Image (tube, rainbow, N blue to C red; front, side, top):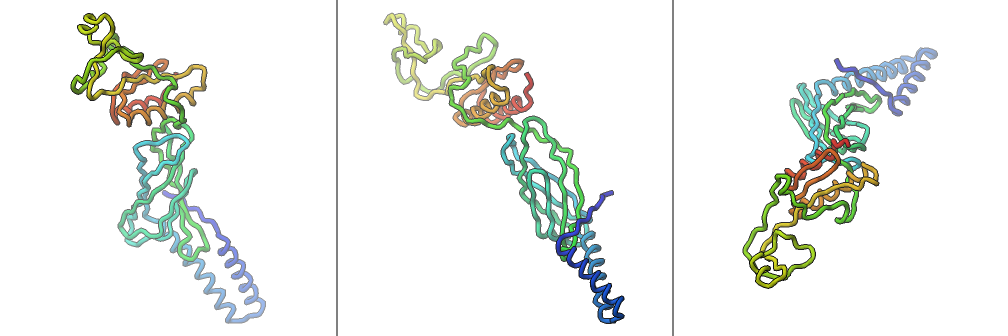
Length: 289
């Protein structure tokens, strides 16, 4: 059973005071016209209260989060409102701690969706919380509303903190010893060239190296990006570290880098694609050293 709360607006306070003044004048003077006006004003207040109650009956809410929610950043949720009664509803307001939304009309037996901006200030699993539904319909004398408690939880990723690409990167880590396979370079062999700093031993062309007596490496027409392992600076604050890792993941994954993380009590081998990004961000969102 919903509990409706009523708040008197400023126009409603003025109207009630005016009604009391006219009612007092009617009693003192015995003027029938003042009695009639006072009766009409009282009837209008009563009718307004009944209509405002009916306006809020039969409403149900559902909320859908976006695919990615980051701490400290506005996230666009979808607020779905269903009207179960045979009458339409008007001038609906939806209030929650981080903002609000507005809907002017929803038809009878209809469903509409409005955008709603939410902000969560901490990472991890967070509850949507309370959403207050209210309306000043029909004449704005009273604001009647009720509270919907949403127990749904949303996984909030750490807040991205911009940093340089050199922050906490371990490149060309040989994971074959640990049982993980790094994808080989793909494409046609373009040429053989001398060894430069940054080249890896797995690119060395050993027959040519033996022939010339110095390292010769293979260069391909198309190369896959190097695998990167993201780690943290233990001297820095944990939340700042996670925010920087989140920033690097969002930036480097679109560049098709195979990414992984190596944190205390957490290791995820490098891989590419959107699913890997989601896996990494979910791990950072719930990470506890």
